[in-house]
Length: 259
Image (cartoon, rainbow, N blue to C red; front, side, top):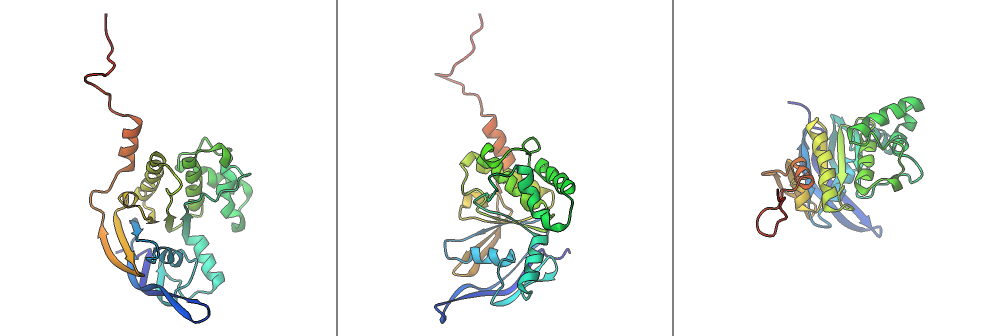
């Protein structure tokens, strides 16, 4: 069996407020996520799901416990080494698109490679590939203001993919989008997952979680439920239905009259 992309053991995070007040945000969480999984993390505000994402995204270190990312023990790394692992192995997609307003889609996507020592030509070549992957091959020279909300989120997804991450973390990726555009974006994520990308999606919306294959629910800093998603939604089927609505027939419908 392949090594898990995420393996956490008794992961605990305690924040200290006012120098002495201990606030436990995560309490003894243990779980694994394997290559190719699509996992939705759910829970009410204050449940610990955002803290969990910060830890597995290498944005913070746990107070106690161990975290293995793609076979690397990262829970005890220094801040600099943690940042290096994060840049190499994790891609992030957030509710806000966080794009540079004056930069084209191509430049926004190529930006994470600036410090990789690659030539501008190579950075742009790779950026074109991932923009094509998310369906924006004809929008590479457009700036964010010239793109729809769904297209901007596609650019953000492409940027998250540019370094070939082992894990894609999506934090409320449809939170700023309407229902139709949300289906579009979930279709992109499902297509990437079908190609083998491991995705962890944080959401408060049970309808969005239904696009995943596994659902993990947090409450009071603990995992209270870990279960497969029964009858997961297909964004592709839903999008096709939106684009090709059934014809209206019956009384009151407009019918073609042949002479």
